[in-house]
Image 1 (spheres, rainbow, N blue to C red):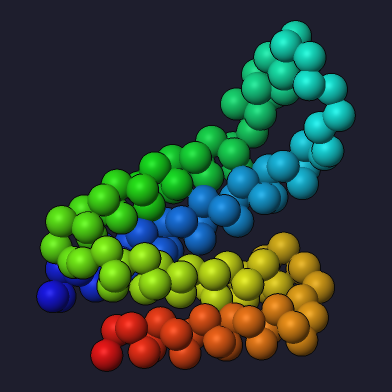
Image 2 (image 1 turned 60 degrees about the horizontal axis):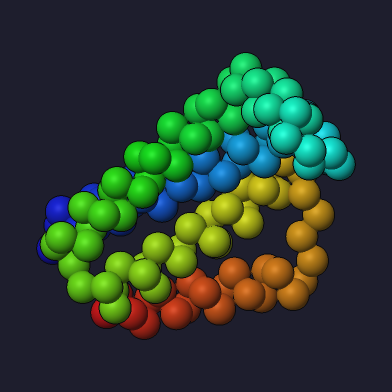
Length: 122
């Protein structure tokens, strides 16, 4: 079961890092308004040169493969709820690193998710 926790931790932490990096990269890029094929190609070219986006995609890939590995050693009924812990970590890190304003309702939701993960893991 120890290997399952290692895969879980890797999946949650790299998924969190990937989401934070991509959020930062997209924040730097700005909102996308033009969805015509040529404009999308220009946007993809521009985003591919953004280090936050590139490393975020790599982190998301590691997260995905860690989750797949987790499924080889743990039941889905454990893996999916346990990875929800990432929502809590993402909320904390969004506040710390992205300076997002997080209201009471979102903090309460993060706490409830934490209790749910604890119940599933026991």
